[in-house]
Image 1 (cartoon, rainbow, N blue to C red):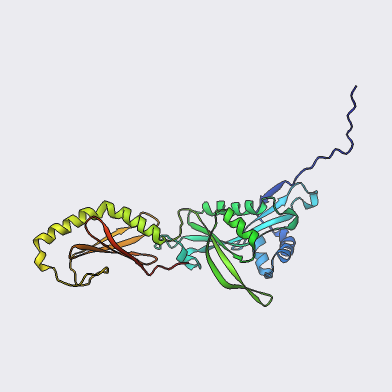
Image 2 (image 1 turned 30 degrees about the vertical axis):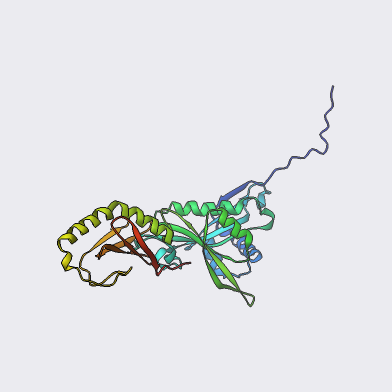
Amino acid sequence: MPYYSMVNIKVHRGPVIAYRPIQPSDLVILERTHGELFPIRYETEFFQNVVNGQDIVSWGAVDRSRPDEQSDELVGFVTVRIIPAKDSEIEDLLSFDASKTDQTLVYILTLGVIDSYRNLGIAGSLIHEVTKYASNLSSCRAVYLHVISYNNPAIHLYKKMSFQCVRRLYNFYYINGQHFDSYLFVYYVNGGRSPCSPLELVTLFVTYARSGFKSLAAKLWKNDERKISKWPKYKESGYLLPTVQSKRILTNESSGCQFQCCIVKSLGYVSVAVATRVGVLYVRMDTMYFLEMSIDGYISN
């Protein structure tokens, strides 16, 4: 009969992580872990607001595999606040309907995991809780946060979670007598998006122009043949000429890139100005082809 030895056989069980809202009983652990993880000191009022859910929404990570007295103790956390989009510092980085005053953003205040629970995917799961929560808020257009410039693991994590680094803020933090830069990360939800880049603007404009400008130009040229003597003579310019009488306004708001288009005819060309949230695109074209393009007033991040 064969003999099987059970000596030195060990079964390794990993942590069983669960997520729940932070509650008043977490106050002491929450204050302690913030002090251990962050170089910035937070006021007692902040922690009171977190545990009592006063203007702050939070999630905590706990390890259910720990002994009973520790199975509900925080090993990670994330805290966020909901703010009106119009009052945020990233209003200029959003393309949204300004007439809807109820639109909001979710700002991540703090995110942390204790050292012994790092590299287990807890931080990513906490961020996922936040983005899922934001996506379920019909008024929310984005989640955003700041991260200190030297925190490379956090920067890598946010990029992995599809956050976009949209801006660098110089001397944003002042810690122990020294200034540090910050990166601003944004995760868009519910149709929120950044304003058009120049390339996106040109692409959208060309697509829009194909459907309408050909017929419009034909009408303008037809009218011009009957009234050619009435057009003034002046030097060619790639910009709009204020003395011209024939012009037409076209608008488009169906996409994330909103623009208003003004078409003016002058001496064999159609001059076009496209006004957007980020600047003005000037185009001079004949009946079929674009001849000149310039971008004026585009604000880069």
